[in-house]
Length: 187
Image (cartoon, rainbow, N blue to C red; front, side):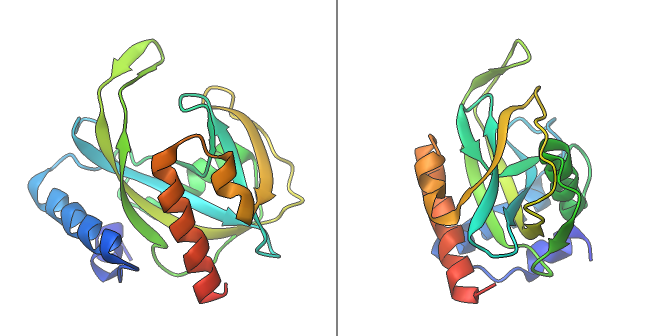
């Protein structure tokens, strides 16, 4: 199933996801380049929210630009298979090999604000990430590696401590929603 179809079929969890989904669908209609960073206003990213088999830990990376522990993920960069993007980024950023998709579709749809920042010596203007997240299980015993050009650490942390590890206040709501959804669906 392609990503656009997954987005159309996605059942929002709450009002925030309902409104974000509507805007994401509108962006798909309005912009031809929404799957690339050529769109300086809004473009797709895809992330993996990764749990261990016991479902009590989450795999995080320490993001260099934001100086914060966060989920793995990255820009679609023209790839319309958002699940493939999430898995590629997960493996590149952490080194995990043994993974399983825990849900057949998108786990969360969010519009995430990105503040202006310097990346590779160039200023990147504020913009929006149209984020599709997938829920994935990984083997806690896989050897972890750091993708040094993007991250300065990789580790498993207790799921309940995730928000405390994030220096990005706008992500606290997103992570809180993830934790609530995981508890509700009892994955």
